[in-house]
Image 1 (spheres, one colour):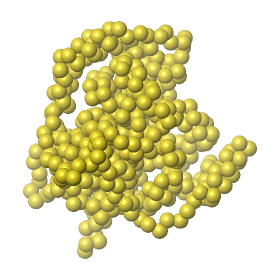
Image 2 (cartoon, rainbow, N blue to C red; image 1 turned 180 degrees about the vertical axis):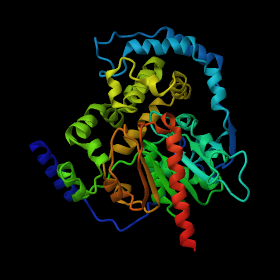
Image 3 (tube, rainbow, N blue to C red; image 1 turned 30 degrees about the vertical axis):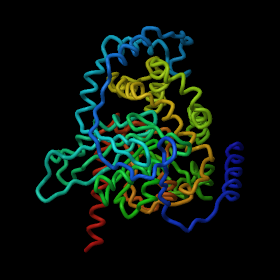
Image 4 (cartoon, rainbow, N blue to C red; image 1 turned 135 degrees about the horizontal axis):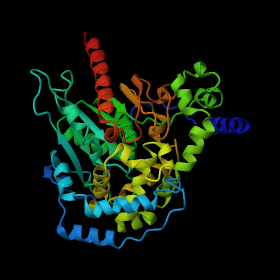
Length: 460
């Protein structure tokens, strides 16, 4: 209890020292040049080019050679996933990778949806663009931009796309889905200059949506997609009809929010907490602070020296898999640390997990994807302009119980002032689109329904 008191008092003091009032409600568009060398005087080629995932036999031969030569370290007895990926289970994954996993078949899966590339601010941006096969008469499709995070990829959305673009499932709202790869991730070109952060990515995706002809659209994100979509809603509130998130970290904390850390467990109603908020958050030191300290070491590395560890991961497919799979275990359910297999196959298939790993391997994007942490965190938490601005557009939040950090609606409201939908989801964790596509699709549709009805009412 005493430690909690000191924690809150210290945080309150820091808050008042650093806080500044901001009258602006929109974020300036960040137009940069991320290509090699100096920006040319000629106009940028805005052509949208078809793209397909392709892998050569030489690349696959090199992969299998590296898998064959992998060195494994025996895990500690009964360590399960508490020290990271358990090498006994990792051996099983590598054996499956070599002998059963069919990458060529998975390439066909990846290519079942139309993919494209286009040059924006000097770099090639890759995206999946899926239109409905048919539309109910007189009903246009609603553009929906969906943004992944790390260590995920555009493939996270492959199970939810059909649920959103098939008018036979939900006649009320049918979507035209755009899933880009964040620059430096997957098949999007990596920025060649320092400073490419979430605002930069949001500016690129804003230009992408305009280039595709969308004047108004919905956006959805989790993990890094949460921050990128939040920034996009701040940059272009008149273009973003609604913002849906399955992660909404509280980066803007007021005095009452800080005080609620100390007293919310005992006086939840005073701070707008619901019973589920209390269950997920308290005792605060154990359920929030200790968990974050225990699970955030990777973020410190990637926010300071990403290239050092990244070079090793980019050179070893087994190391790459170990690093990525550990996050898919812990972030899906923290209790999976108690299992020797990390519980990975309880929620995902090895084909899905290895397809995501292979996207990182064949594109060689591990180092550039890890740099995204440094670009966003090197200036400190809560210090950038977007951290101090609210979000005005209608917002929906799907709060999954096993998310890496829970944000109560009372806290989220400080940042997202127009929350029209906030739901405690019955199950699921961090990789919601891949783990629970039906639940996430239903929540997106529920949110869009509320936004559309409200806008219709306003027009009347």
